[in-house]
Amino acid sequence: MKKIVIIGGGIAGLSAGIFAQKNGFQSTILEKHHTLGGECTGWDRQGYHIDGCIHWLVGTKEGTPLRKLWDTVGALDGVDIYDPESFMAVEHDDVTVHLYRDLERLKASWLEISPEDKEAIEELYRDVKKLHSFNMPAGKPMDMMNIIEKIKFMLSMKDIGPVMQKYSKMSMQDFARKFKHPALRETLASFLPEGQYSALSIIFALGTFTGGQSSIPYGGSKALAQRMLKRYLSLGGNVETSSEVVGLDIERTVVKRVECKNGKSFKADFFIAACDARTLYERLLKGQYPDPEFEKRFSNPTLYPLASNIYVGIGYEGTMDEIPRTLKFPVRSVNIKLNQKQIEHLQMTHYAYEPDFAPAGHTVITFAINQFQPELEAWEALAKDKEAYAREKARIGEAVINAMETRFPHMAGKLKLLDVASPQTYERYCNAYRGAFMGFWPTIRGKSLAHTGRIKGLKNMVLSGQWLQPPGGLPIAVITGKDTIMRLCKAEKRPFVGE
Ligand SMILES: Cc1cc2nc3c(=O)[nH]c(=O)nc-3n(C[C@H](O)[C@H](O)[C@H](O)COP(=O)(O)OP(=O)(O)OC[C@H]3O[C@@H](n4cnc5c(N)ncnc54)[C@H](O)[C@@H]3O)c2cc1C
Image 1 (tube, rainbow, N blue to C red):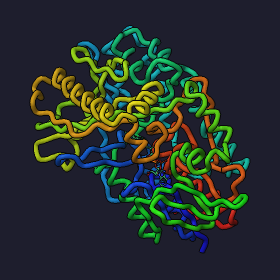
Image 2 (image 1 turned 90 degrees about the vertical axis):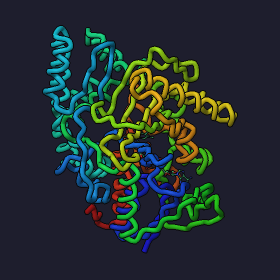
Image 3 (image 1 turned 135 degrees about the vertical axis):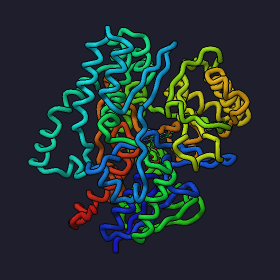
Image 4 (image 1 turned 180 degrees about the vertical axis):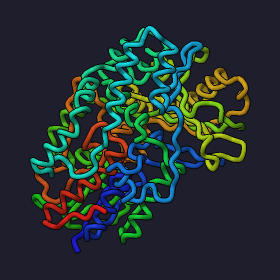
């Protein structure tokens, strides 16, 4: 039986492992951390569970190709799906803009806020509705399709393609400027920072959310990863945790062995790097096997930006059922300055729908404060001074609590800071370059990437995971893990077992 070593036990590594086992390989996942799941995780603090990932999962709709894939890897086994009524609510002065799941309701509520924006609202409605017919492809990757399959795929995209094209070339700010009402404008503009970020991000999110394609599996992110791990182990896969790969033994064009920091080494016929792309090219391959597509992207962060998060966990001694699950509110009376950048909004998500995430009568809340290029560099520099880094995290945590108490005076004295993760936290735990939580963010001038993971000069090692296709995220991780094994089966001339 041919052996595969998979470096990294995130969602891509687990997906690759499951399909490796299904297809007659003997695989071992080597994971740096003591637990699997990678960025799809959660952690316990002071009696609360902080969910560290899924705000929405594309592929929860029954009968779609992606749902089938999630089912095959056991991610949604025996779990109910929670459908929140709104994707997010955004407050502006005394107006609250809801991004409702029901697109008709969304349109009606926006028209009520701003009848003078009728034209722009109806255009948005029409375009989002077109995306309802979009099913994220989860079958064969493009490079494995024959000409007939490619034509069929193109035809399936005929209504959606123009919408994607239109918004991928429109900046978020230009899109926001189509609306006259300041609350609608701010709802869109605050989605991403000023610059070249494409409006496709919000259109795609709204399309999948209002089309019923994306929702939230109960139990959260860590439980989802654990279900995949269970499926992998049940198929005979091996796992080695606390096993960070730090070296490769390469003879000519063939990787013979990987070496771990803990002194263990593993031989195999094939190696799959289901880890951060920068970790692979720089740390493991030591710059000896550069890939022009990735070089271009890493050296041009303006066209190909990365995003990370400050992720604040707060425990509230009370219930929040009456407050939208995800709410963005302006921060006025409290100054939160991060690395000299004034934060104008805070986005919170509460988990009232998950009673097991908090003690009885309490609720856990998270704040995701997106961090982009200049902030990521500042965090990298700050982390070098451990005390200053800890002070900054504590300061941010306190500032978020103050902002929360200003917005919700009845919560004063009942909020407890549980945890503050920074971009450096993701770097430390997952080797994520600059803490990136997705791949390269789509911009209006950046080119789309569809990488097969092949490493030029190496015959038996490939990259897999969220870095192969923008914008990354859980669907890309699970799809690319599967695709990697599909390509391997083709190279080995064996039929691919996909179910
Ligand atoms: C706060 C936050 C919110 C998010 N929200 C969503 C969401 O709502 N929806 C969504 O779809 N996506 C979301 N994401 C993104 C999603 O979590 C990632 O896209 C996805 O988990 C990436 O999976 P991956 O397997 O490709 O990579 P990773 O999760 O990065 O997995 C790589 C694994 O490799 C391990 N590793 C790295 N180097 C080595 C080494 N040298 N040796 C051994 N092991 C190594 C790491 O420890 C890690 O376990 C979110 C992420 C974050 C951080």
